[in-house]
Structure formats: C-alpha cells, structure tokens
Length: 281
Image 1 (tube, rainbow, N blue to C red):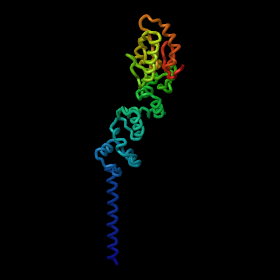
Image 2 (cartoon, rainbow, N blue to C red):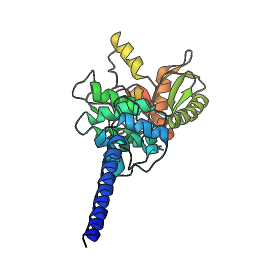
Image 3 (cartoon, one colour):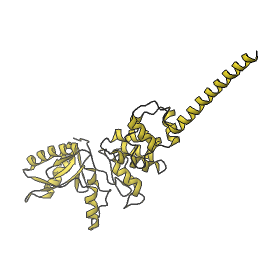
Image 4 (cartoon, one colour):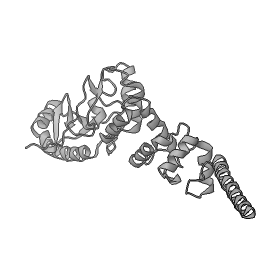
C-alpha cells in the first residue's frame, strides 16, 4: 500500500513539475517573444513590429487581429500612431500621390486639434487639397483673421468676398486658353463665345487675365495690389478679362457681352467675364 502511495505521489510530483515547467515556459516565451500570439509569420515585418511597437500596441494588434500589411508601410515614419491607421489608409486612398510621411504628418496634425479629423474629411470632400487644409489648420487666413473657407470652391456659383475665401486653393482642371488658364468647362465655353463675338463684331479679342494663383496674388499684394490673396474671384479659375485688339472700341465689346455672354454660361461681373455654367437665352 505504501509502495502504491509512493508511486502515486511520484506521479503527482512529476505532473506538477511538468505543469510548472509548461507555465514557466509559456511565461518566459511570452516575455521574450511579445509576438508569440501574433499569427503572421513574415520575419522582416515581425522584426519591425517588435522594434517600433510597445507592449500595449502589440496587444492591440493581436487583440484586433490587425495584419502587418495594414500598417507596415507607415511604421517607420516619425510620428506614426498604430491607433490612427484607419485615417492613414483613408487619406492614402483619397490622395494616393501623397508619401507615407506626408500622410502621417497630416493625420497627426489633424489629431492635434479638436475636431481636426472631421474637418479634414469635410475639406477634402469639398475640393480642397491636403496642402490647403494643412495651411488652414496651421496658419488660418493670414490676411483676414475672421475669414471662413468657401463651402465648395469647385462649384460654379462659388463666391469669394471679404469674409469668405479659398486660401491656397488651386482648381484641379485648369486648361490652357492661349497663355492663360481657366477651368475646363469655362475654357470650352469661352472659346465658343470668342468665336461668335469675333464673327459678329469682325474684331479680334485678346484675353488679358484669367486664373491667378495664390502665390501670384501674394506677390501683387506686396507690391500694392488691393486684391487680397485667397479672396480674388480670379483664383477660382472661372473669370477672364478681355481686351479688343487694335482700335476696336471697348464700348462695342462691352455691349455685345452684356447681350450675349449669358448664352455661353457667363455673366459680366466687375469688369470681367465670370463663368457660372448657367446658360441663358
């Protein structure tokens, strides 16, 4: 009986030792291999994860089964935050030309201000570039402190004034009109207007001013121009100034435009033609 008890005791002891060993092994393994429960086997990516993420962040990617390919392109970028990866991927999808560094930098800037992420989504949806949004977040309007951004700078009925501007906005569809630039639809309508005008009046007209960039407006403003950068109608790429060639009277040109500009989607506005897209008989 004693021998039997001894055998049982030895078996129990061995089992306890094996169990203790297993527990110790697991603890040691988890301690020295933080990614022991991470099911992705790529050694190079695991090495980057182990180098750049702390224990809490590793627990996060394990708990939510976040694959390395979901964030590995960003992990070495200064300022990278594993908890903001969804926003990195959103921005890269919206603006694929941005580098990973630019993506991380902009998203982290957004997170540094209250409501910044929501505002960034809104601005990019409305047609503003990442550069313009970054400038808005960082500097606001340098010339009019209480200015707000125009709701949709891409709309043909967009208006700029002393309290609403477009900051450094640049239209995405600028098209050449001679040596000048207009937005695509405005350029096409202008060419039709020009053909009809020159045929009716038997004169040649020359466009003298169309799209003007924010940088050009800044340079002119520094030299005494009264046009405030970010608040000029010409920055929208929808306005064009005309001049008759030679001795043709400007009054004759002006009268024709008042009668006919609407047929081509323009209105006569503040001394120039402004494309609205609204064709009127």
